[in-house]
Length: 482
Length: 120
Image 1: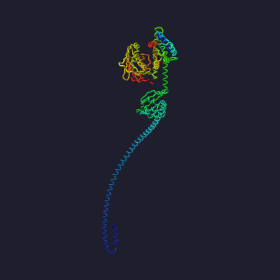
Image 2: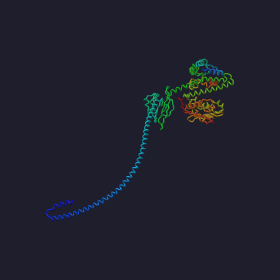
Image 3: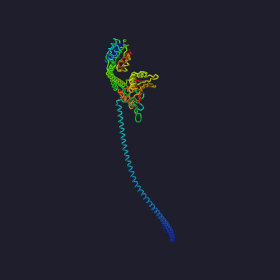
């Protein structure tokens, strides 16, 4: 740049004066020298600058070298680290993979299990559905009439047999769904049922409902409970018309048979009695002995027939005929006085504790009640050893008359207490002591007492004695069982 | 001596009882069915009648119904002798005016005599 400027200056001052030119030249030379010096200085400076730059560069280079080595170290460290990491990573990955595989397997299992469960659920659902269908089919086709009341005592279900029993149409029955038992009266045919069951659904066991000669039903009502409490109440209605007919025929048969048996047996009894009494002429002692035993056998036969008749009457449920208001103590007193002969034979004493104050009257079937009292007294006489005591007492506790017959007899065996009122049952010690007996007396007594609305029970101690007590309710509304 | 009419279809019973009562001294008339019984009581007006319930031709209850209609017979005491002690029958006999009732298996001829003595 500077050189270019010098060239231009020489071109413009060449021609006019040499001196001038010389001067100029000298000047110019001088200028040039200056310029050269300047240039040298410049160069020197540049050189210095370059050296400085080189130094700097070298420094930088050195720094770079250092940095590079540092970097290399770092890189190699990192590389190592990475290598280590990689190696660890491999392991870890492997482990994780294994773990994951395990998890996958596990979840696979779970999935399978879940699928199985779902299948099972489906199966269960299907089965539940089938069960429901089955149940419905059973209910619909069940021979008995069924009424199901839900847990709030509203009618939830009625099967078609109900329609037939109560002369109602399907629509009639449908209109009763959701109603309480009392509401069933809305359909006229159900009135007798409502009367029998009462206003609320209490437990009923086999109550008989006579709708006509051709239709006798047996009604039972039972609370149905599930695992979580009451589900509802099931009323079952069973047609027992046929059973009733057969029962009646059976009873009639036994009754007729027993009555027919009584005719010849009375003839035998009377004949033997008159022979024994000498009305038909004298007999030898041996003849008397035989005839006496025959007479006693015949008496046993009479008792057996009487018991049979009583049992059939009980089973027929028409045991009470003649309910009248009487003083029970008079009846007991009169009865207690009829055993003097038997008591004398066994040297037993019979005490009757007649109440101090007159007792309230009770409404009873006198004949039947006599049977109860005489059964108890006769048992006491039979099963009390010679010299014992029998005491009969009667009290009123305000609600019931309580009649007790206490003896000092052989007692009832503990393990036989439960069966003592069972038909045909006789205590094993009783059989040993007295071979004769039908096992019907206490059965009959219990039935009579219960038909009167009372109860019968006993306390007994083996070898010491027994006390039988029965009650008759004072406000007795006893009615024959129907 | 008092006259007793015995109406009973069971031969053995009627013979035994007839013999027993005759031995005591009663004047005995026998009838084997209800119809015959009615005829005999119209003939000889007994002081007491022993009457069975179940008999051929006419039963004991029918006999009593006819007696009730006839003022001449209505007042004669009747003791029923029956095979049955069925309360329904007993009730019916009472309504028809029977003086007493006895079940053959539960009494013997001696006791029958005692009963008769109560009503004659």
